Length: 284
Image 1 (cartoon, one colour):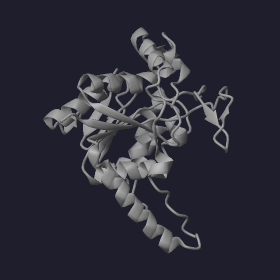
Image 2 (cartoon, rainbow, N blue to C red; image 1 turned 90 degrees about the vertical axis):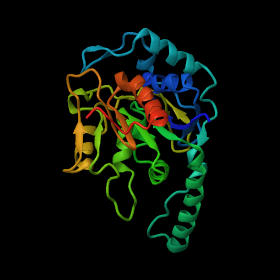
Image 3 (cartoon, rainbow, N blue to C red; image 1 turned 180 degrees about the vertical axis):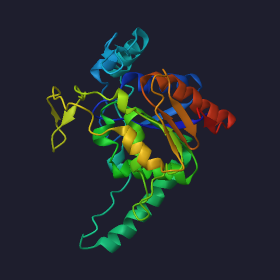
């Protein structure tokens, strides 16, 4: 039977190669991929990831080659991502603790979540491409946290790239509040590779969900991911920055993490190795 992957992408902008890299590998392997966004809107590619020769300031080298620029433009202009699953219509929100009917709402939440978790049975793995957009609508999205916890409860592969790795640090049972990557080996954007300025998005929305001007510059990233991951894995886990190395990709099953753009194709290849041959460990 063909493998089926659930891929959650940011509506505020994904980095082209971090989607295209694993996507092309998985499609070539014969897999089926379902796409999902926070509100069911088409996710846009970040403009620098469609610009051949784009120079990454902290790396001081071009990180968008001709192949991935072309493939990202093709996908961005296609209808491939036109109708993603609407996460807000699928998974329930956790009720406010001080709501007047909290007890009943909490029971309803768990019952609905259990149904949603059962619906995850058809998937073999979860893929979370990176970019700046995930910082806005994925990293602290409680519904996405519950998707991640559902895959974790079923011991299924969870792959995350770049700033989407933060989703793994924040996804945790709200009563236990312990990081799900505690004691694990992970990678993610190293402090040395963080922008000092120029963090932007491919799309922005107002409070009613209407598209807004996209020229905003938020300066540095919203947080240093390395610090979050170092704290989240605890003393028995390890954060691997791979500073100075072209690739930093870590598999500590069920978590597969890629640091940045250049890990993207390998992330896809390792997903295939996990799903076809049972690979459990790589990169450490």
